[in-house]
Length: 251
Image 1 (cartoon, rainbow, N blue to C red):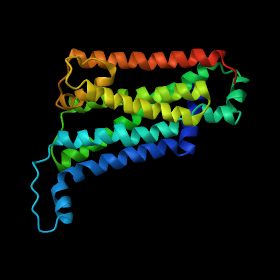
Image 2: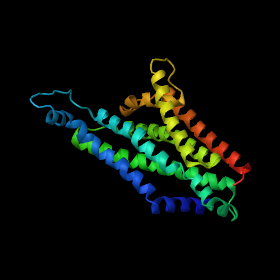
Image 3: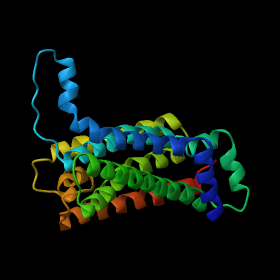
Image 4: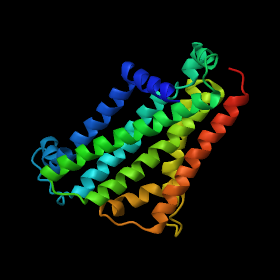
């Protein structure tokens, strides 16, 4: 397991997939604070003779905009990178080669799932800390506990479609189908959150986004932790289903 996990990290770094995603997240972390603070000035540059007055931007609003970038642009890029995590190796014969060595099918899938969890949490945590620090220097401070809660929520949100992408990549062996499944999951998560926005139910896994504004202020509730816990149950369930299907499927 340790050697397979090390191999995943080495391959992700050598192929520039891991540094590329980190740089993309860092780009938005550095972009959003000044973009939000100077939005009025930027708009006035394109509106000749007009004075545009916007309400003062808050630190929480700038960070929420960055969180939206992570949950859209960075997530889509991560899905594209992840879509071939198994399918690509199946097609070029690497999967069969690994399984002829002392590597079990369970270890093969578990190493890839662990790699996704670790790298996703690492990218989100590092870029969020950079955004929080830049926001603090440019606009104002953020609650440290709020930033921590936001990192937990964002990591959980990103891992749900990424684990589905891994599962479909392993089950079908077709990278395009895996990418479609991940992007469809992203769309369904956004649609479900919008449909349930006026509902009294607030503890479902697909409703994590509604907790971000309050979490940034350092507040949480049992419903938030229930939603996070159920989301991780789904993530683990996807890993178990992928392992079970991969164990009985011809490579």
